[in-house]
Image (tube, rainbow, N blue to C red; front, side):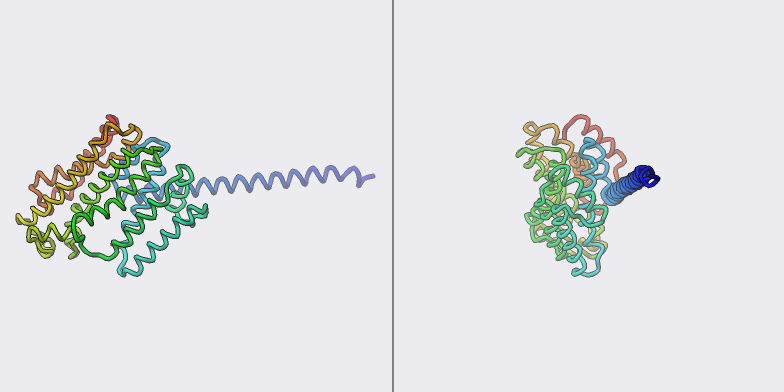
Length: 316
């Protein structure tokens, strides 16, 4: 009789114990998952803020729904961009590129590696159905760039810019929910302009390391040797090279803006970087295309305000 009367009480106590233990485990898992997610997000924020400040500020001005994904994409881009300068041997750089190729494939299999940028990319892919092709194209182009040589001509620099900077913009447009052929055309031109400007901005740094990547055809046209850039020459022939390259970036910006009337307003936040490009091109013109002028290496403190105004006006 006693056994019969105690069994239900034991069952109730056991069920309660199991239920409580399960809830505690779930709570811990949820807490750990939240903490890990916050860590991953912070990692991406920190790396973009330190390595791509203009991109960081631009991302803050995106709609909240796309902001975190934008930072993940820019962190991915930063990780790839810094491989070339952070390795002493090409083989090591190629191994890192292969890691990212494998990572992207695993992300699209819902099995991302335990790494902050990978985790945030996976989150962005699941949320916005981002196109894998654009990510792989960025990696492949960065991989080819490990050859560490000057561009043969301006067209080769434009191709590199299209496959890297423009591909990133296509992904940003997808994170904003924009699917528009005119927006894609504008992104292509802005990406090319950004790649060209980045090449110019990096010239003093690269030259100090005895590396020159400016298009060889334009250098030959103006009889400017690699040694001229390595010495930091400010002669007219060097300025002429910079003028020709900067002019092409300006042309691409003009082409991009020619599509503005046909582009949905929701796409404009992806193109805020035009403020930064415009600022550099204006400054290099003011110093008569002297790419080594010290003022070009200083960050414009008004850029965040200009980005905000452009965002508020919904223009690019």
